[in-house]
Structure formats: C-alpha cells, structure tokens
Figure (cartoon, rainbow, N blue to C red):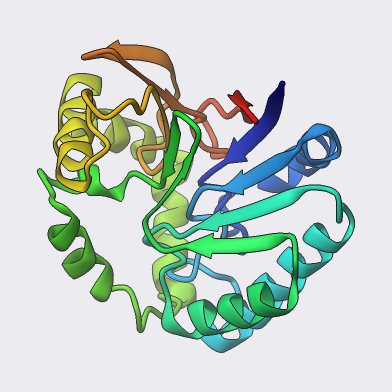
Length: 238
C-alpha cells in the first residue's frame, strides 16, 4: 500500500510578481487527491509582501493556511519553512495553528517521509552544513517588507526577465546537486542513508528526477513570469 504525497514550493504568496493565484485550482485538486500534502517553503513571501508589515502578512498567511487545511481534514498537511517565510512572527503563529490543528505539522528545515526527504533547498546558497543553514536563517527572522519603492525597482527587473537569468547563473544544476548532497551528508540523509528521493525548491528552476549517487532530485520550479512550475507527486510506502 502506498500513500500519495503532493508538494509545492516557492508560491511566494503576497508578492505581486507571483503567478501562484493561477495555480490555486490545480493545487486544490492535488490536495483533494492527496493522503499528505507538503508546503515546501517560501509559500509566503515576507520580504516582498504587498502588505505593509510582517505582522499583517503573518496574520493573512495563517488565515489562508488554516482555511486550506480545514477544507480537507482527511489529508495530513506538513509545512517546511523556507528562507522567505522563516520569520519569527509567522513561526510563532504557525506553531500555534499546528498545536490546535490535528492534520497540520511543521518543520523548520526538512521532513522525512519513508525514503523521501522534503526540504526547501536554501542550503544551496553556499556549501552549507546544518549549522551554516541555521546561521543563514537567523538573518531572516525579523524580515519586513522592502516597501513600495524597492518593489517597483524589482518589477522592472522582472519585466526584463532578469530573475530568470540570475537563477540560472547562480544555480547551475551540477552546483545545486553537489551542495544539496553535501548538506544531506551532514544531516545524515546522504546517498548511503536509504533516502532515495529529494524534493526541494528555492532555485526556481525545475528538475525532474535528476540522479546523483543513487538519489533522485526533484524541483517543481516557481510560478513566476518566464519560469516553469509544477506540483510534485510522490508515492511512499505506508
């Protein structure tokens, strides 16, 4: 018997450059079919939120998440934080929501289910260990929206597709997989651990089952202009 697990990352909800709204019907369909559903980081975007404060973004994020989870009580939901939603005001409210919601749990860095591992993937910013990632995330805890002026500058960059070029420049596949492998070795889920499938995000670049040292790597991309996006599905032994 297997369980159907779906996952998404990098929706960047509340960022006006995100196209996630277009995919919400498909996400709802996946949730309706899922035994478990993983929100795999950067589901909400505190740095580029259209709302004026992190507190307001957190309140709306938790409201959205609670409504989503309550619509499908038969599904087990898991929330793995990314860097853009590793914000203290949100973490506190997410923890409270999980405490009162039987079908929701959350993890700060990764989730292991059977032979599959789900993590956001911001460990590929450099050649990171678990401690390096913790230090990196500490810099996001007090994140606030960058405001209208900087948002407008970023709008211009998106219209020229600079974000696509930047993602490809900084996250070539070979480098990404090597850095993920280094991090996985450090946390005990490397090639010799029995973990076979790795689901991650962060780079915004889709990867479909790339094999490295006996492990397969999957990335659903991001719903941003000029980039591919898909909901990932895994089947895991119950």
